[in-house]
Amino acid sequence: MDTFVINGGKPLFGEVSISGAKNAAIAIIPAAVLVDGVCRIENIPKVSDVTIQLEILRELGASVRLVNQNAVEIDCRGIRNYIAVSDLNRKMRASYYLLGAFLSRFGQAEVAMPGGCNFGGIRPIDQHIKGFEALGASVDIRNGVICAHSEAPLEGANIYLDVVSVGATVNIMLAATLIRGQTVIENAAKEPHIVDLANFLNSMGADIMGAGTDVIRIRGVERLVGGTYSIIPDQIEAGTYMAAAAACGGSVLVKNVIPKHLDCISAKLEEMGVEVEEFDDSVRITRKGPLSKINIKTLPYPGFPTDMQPQFGALLCLAEGTSIITEGVWDNRYRYADELRRMGAKIQVDGKVAVIEGIEELSGAQVHACDLRGGAAMIIAGLCAHGSTEIEQIEYIERGYEDIVDKLHRLGADIRKVHRDDPAAFPKAN
Ligand code: EPU
Image (cartoon, rainbow, N blue to C red):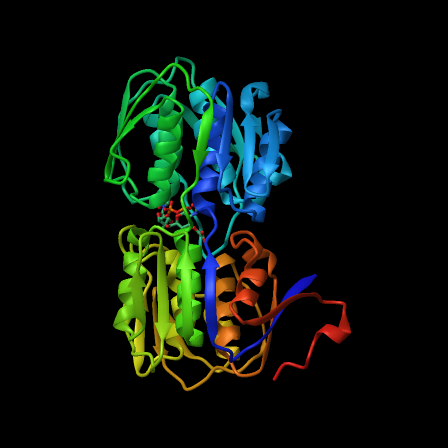
């Protein structure tokens, strides 16, 4: 079992280049199922969720050719049926986007119930099902498989989402792309990766308008053709390095970003007393003085992203005064708080609210990554802590952060990936 070992307390200096957005990539890859031709997708992040997603398509009969580390050519014309129930499907959340893609292409879909990060509560899919049913499918769950079938061809419909859901918005967009008539999604998610998916589909011949607003209109088209598309930079990866620079001190240029996507994160850092300079496609984070307390409420985009909440949870451990975080998207996303407490953090959680009393310094400890972003929080805590931190269950982190060890290393961090059974690799945690 691999772990990360960090000797903390070093400021970060230099430049880091941000990879393609993981959550865009894992929606766009299954969208290739809709394309009657070869699509070349560039700026794909090399992370395990993407590898699994590509492997699922291969298993289903698609041809997947890696052009280089970050570009792939996918041809899904070889996929002949609409059943995806292998173990790989259960390993990740976004495998359920095959439901929308299969429904659109075949009018039927059978896909294993998805896995993905467990935040300590259930992750419902009622809004996805409501959308598919509105298009004319009947949906039931049998033996861990979501089955969506229809006697007659599916037809566009108006769908109002009861909660703003990224996953349901993606799945309904996919399902509506190749079916007859017009579909309107109201109260749609507005995240940058929703816009990226719409841009990908439109560049292959789809007719989707309004992505990025809360009303998305999809006019079904007969066919999508192949083409080339480049994925947007990862808002959350960028935010994670910004938070790391703020926690450790120093000055870091975060390159290859869309600064507009980072506004909500930059604003909170500035409120804490961190300097944020914005350029065309990069932001510089500089921290010289102490950090001030802030309050955060996570919300769907353009609000403060829930996927940055744990990283800010770690950062706020060092802010002067008492900060309050309110989680507004998930019922529970604070499993990382127990791990931070092992490092001396004063963090109390009550339901959706965390109260964090700032302390002088965290101290290194043996901790684990509870999920992807919780793991990123432990890296930030380890980087700024006094002493050595060992992080276990790093496979969660590797689902979503490309080359994180190398990227941090180049910023001056002392972080290594080691095999747990290598006794020499572990200084005693203090
Ligand atoms: N919800 C429902 N019913 C549904 C779907 C969602 O009630 O049918 C609720 C959820 O319980 C939650 C809220 O709606 O309270 C938002 O969930 P959403 O569907 O937007 O989340 P998701 O699509 O499952 C994606 C990202 C998450 C990110 C959320 C919110 C992917 C693969 N995952 O999840 O990213 O937290 O949107 O922005 O895109 C991560 O990258 O670490 C991650 C977990």
